[in-house]
Length: 310
Image (tube, helix red, strand yellow):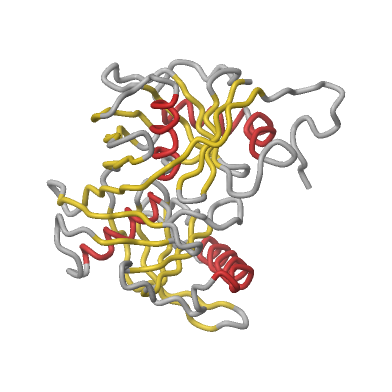
């Protein structure tokens, strides 16, 4: 299996160029459902150790339905197939440029969540115009054993987020274990309480927000992903959901750019425009770097051919 690895703000992406399963020829949303329902061992074998690593996201290239798109892509981590992935789209764009499949300019990519636009400014810098994003519910509270009341917003940016601002724990790297444990507890309670999307979609990501001590940065975040690891980047879909909350509260005007940094200090530049409804159209600018071009080997005698699954 031919793959190319990259990282976006420290968050790894693995683009699968060949060797994927037959998902049929339906919409990307339907093909993503097939991948999730019938091919879990496929994506776990790529994402889990010993081949993969915590926080890695896979990007399976597929034929797009819309011929205006340079490719279709289905994203996943070791535990779930994703609707969309911002850092993965930046990494994919840089990978396509590395392969000579796209050049500097504007291109379209089809995802299960919809068509996104990318602008490749140079070999490492990409602006993603994401799908329409929205806040669904504001100031939703839940009770955590041993913690107390937590209040946050529910928002959609291609995945489903519960966003707490300000964070009850300082967003510093030495607190990553505490932040991880807290956000796992928050997500489990949110799912138990039925907190999620309008149609019952469960929360898959949790964001803790705070102001940044860096005078060149507007905010800092910690983002829990579906595989219970933290996002090394500021999370593109999470930043989109966050922009929707800022817009809904009148705290950020259309076209005004802010800088969001991750728990490890990697930045995205963010802005939005208004859609025709109450939704927003986010723009996320970040950088990615190719780190490896590799052939994955699956030996039938290998006891961990499908990954280490505990």
